[in-house]
Amino acid sequence: MLVGGPTGGLVLRGAIRGQRRRVVSASALGMTHQACEALVPVVIGAAIDSAFATGSAQALLRWLLLLGVLFLVLSTCYRTSARIAEGAGEHAAHLLRLELGARVLDPRGGADANRLPGALTSVATNDARRVGSVATVLPYGCAAIAALVVSAVALLRISVPLGLLVLLGIPPLLWLGHRISRPLEQRSETEQESAAHASGVAADLVSGLRVLKGMGAESAAVDRYRTTSQDSLAAALRAARSRAGHEGALLALTGVFIAVIGIVGAYLAMDGSISVGDLVAAVGLAQFLIAPFQLLAYANAEFAQARASARRIADVLASPTAVPGGTQTPGPAAGHVRLRNVHLGDLHGIDLDLPAGSLTGIVTRDPAAAHDLLLALARETDPTEGRVELDGTPLTDLDPDLLRRAVLVSPHDADLFESSLLDNVRAGAAGPDSVEAALAASTADEVTRLLPDGGDTVLAERGRSLSGGQRQRVALARALAADTPVLVLHDPTTAVDTVTESRIAARLRESRRGLTTVLITTSPALLAVTDRVVVLDGGTVSAEGPHAELVTANETYRKAVLA
Image (cartoon, rainbow, N blue to C red; front, top):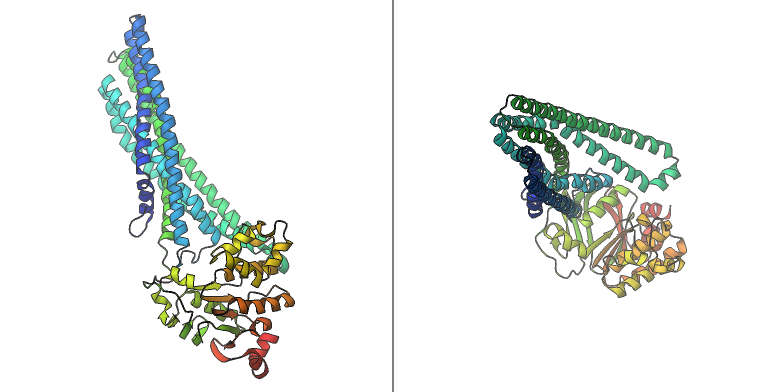
């Protein structure tokens, strides 16, 4: 839908361009409907002059028949136009949501920088709906303009002064309406930003509800959300007042304009310049003009709010990527990973060689260093200095999407989806056999036996219907089922009991035999089954060797693992 660097204007034009056929069809039908509406008072006036004034029943019957045809056409056109226009708006919003989803899920990342998940959700729902509505509103605006033109032409045939009054009065009214919409546009943008922030804070608090209760911080969380919600309410009320003022001002201007038309028409009738039927037609047209002017006021307000939302969508779509896209397509990966003098955050000159097929443990007491290592291995952020290689090729040269099919990084807080347990494990699985093997290796098969519907049991949001240990086992099964050449696991067993952890450790080694596996953990049970352990201290490699040897000889390692 969008071409070039997205801006608010491009987003709006893209929404309309993507639904051009529907918009054109709805506009044509809407203009036909409004033209027929405008002709109704004209036909009534003509009937008065040619039928009532002469007493001709046949003439009256002909005019009534013509009125019936007009009402049949205008009602059919209205229903059809409304249906097509609403469909165009829904399709435009849907396509925008797809674009936003593609940008947020872009393997190069960056769209979520400095944005809460709830805020992104608000952009993809409320803002996309408002921008999509331009495809619905545009046909109404076109129909209103057509009604004004037909009314002006009809009035010109009745009286040149009346027709000129409408033709010369419409442009200033439209210009004033556009000027009046400026405050509404600004306040609407503020309203959407406040609402998005409130949604983000609410989602953030709900996701951490158990932690907040454990800390006894519920009151502080409630106060934080109350403040955010009140700010959002105040912004919404300001936008509502602005819209009410905008619509009121336009209706007042419209009322004055229509009153002037009626007064001029009455004067011309009293002067004998127009007939009684012409006066009835002129007054009817003046009253009819209220509807198209209201449509224009509505369309103007919707466009003002859509422009504000379009800028917010454009900001997300134009977000710089966290990492540049590579050009090389990795072939079948052997799984040899190497870090050469990597500097990133709390990592300072890391040199690390992870041979293909090895099972390596990495121990650090600094959570920030572990986090930065995960970012580097997942290529969510490129090192500020040095490089990470896969089979001798720098990760920066590889396509990020294809890279992550070879290197899977499973974070400690990996979320589960709101679907069945088996569906969670199957997501990204290499095949049905790998699912069964992964369930057994992670002992998640024991979890399925405890659930009412086994593996088909639908989990609550983020897997909250499971205990912490059960969630970890299902998340580990999902990571193992992918069967990737390189798997990086961060503290996968912190919530399981020691007996289960020992079983997982033994099965994990067997299930990953011949594949490269990295365990970033301080669990003695997991580290005991590794080929070697690397110790990070102060952001650099301070020691490496077998687990048993390090426990005996390295005090830093001993404190980290056995404390």
